[in-house]
Image (tube, rainbow, N blue to C red; front, side, top):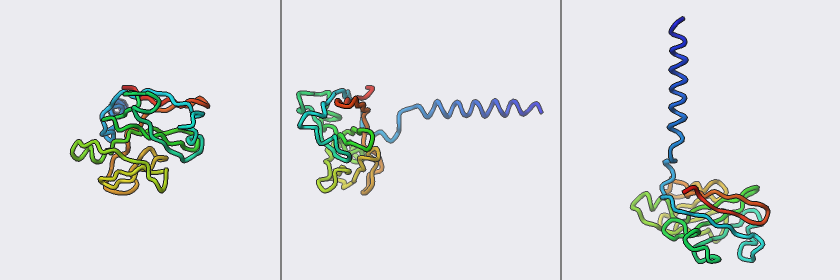
Amino acid sequence: MKKRPKIILFLFAASLCSVICSCKKNKNDVIPNVYVDFTIDLTDSEFISLISIGESCVVSQFTNNFGYRAAGFSGNGIIIHSGIDEFFAYDRTCPHEYALDGSTVKIEIDESNSMYAVCHVCKTKYGLPINGAPSEGPGRYPLKNYKTSYDGRRLRVWNSY
């Protein structure tokens, strides 16, 4: 009977350790952090298409004079995608190519289907409504995600860097 409290204590300690270890940086996030923080107005003609579900657009340092705040990693820019009840923001740097050799290849929104982004080098296709997860091709890492918040008119994109 005295062994039971030790087992419970051990299980508690093991659970606590696994929770603490799981709070570390996601190993699937291969693209390094850079500062991102900008707000777009969805009534602006450049972004009004994002009001429709399933639409995507690209924001860069040249968009509305955002500068480095919207440049993403290596200045490749950011893809914004409108989901059913939320917006997604992804870095345009291909995580597969970066993981292979550190190259900073820019992905593009698929011209035939704005629900995907494609790397022209490795041909990996990333699903924009599914957190940028690879759906075709050799890539196994998802696109780098940025946080978003929407107040009914303005969409803020940022990270905690």
